[in-house]
Amino acid sequence: MGPVVVREPDAGTFLRRMRLSDLGAVMEIDAASLPKPWSEAIWRSEIESPFGLYLVLEEGDEVIGQIGVRSVLDELHVTNVAVRPGHRGRGHARAMIQGALSAYPDARLVHLEVRPTNRAARTLYQSLGFRETGRRPRYYGDEDALLMTLDLSEGRP
Image 1 (cartoon, rainbow, N blue to C red):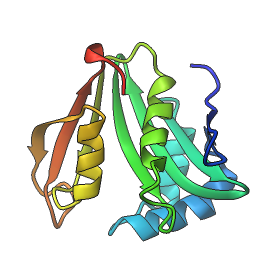
Image 2 (cartoon, helix red, strand yellow):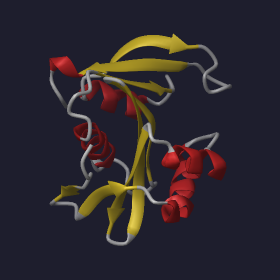
Image 3 (tube, rainbow, N blue to C red):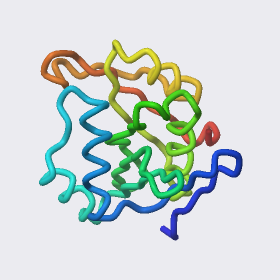
């Protein structure tokens, strides 16, 4: 896997590998986006894992989004996608997903979980070609998760 840098020319943003020094901003975004954000220990473990790719989206000097992907053989699992409030609705999540997937040209399938009540995320994932393929009961504790899968053999988003 080569370097990951994706520029959005119109927005002045770019996607790069997450560093431990990004944890403060990443955890802020996580806390503003999820009812049960990850702890610093979980983030550190994920960033240091040889099976994961964690990226941040920067605009100027500000981290405005993050994405995490774990890789096992030819399958990927999107573990985390979040955009800072105030920057949502501008296509940043789409760009992060496309950028992260581009780092894995040989991947065949991509999986992720999403809350059934998160209509915006479900709409985005469906527009990228993800299909609902299952349900994980009480995945979030207070709510089930929909399992969504993208078959990259049908084309890349």
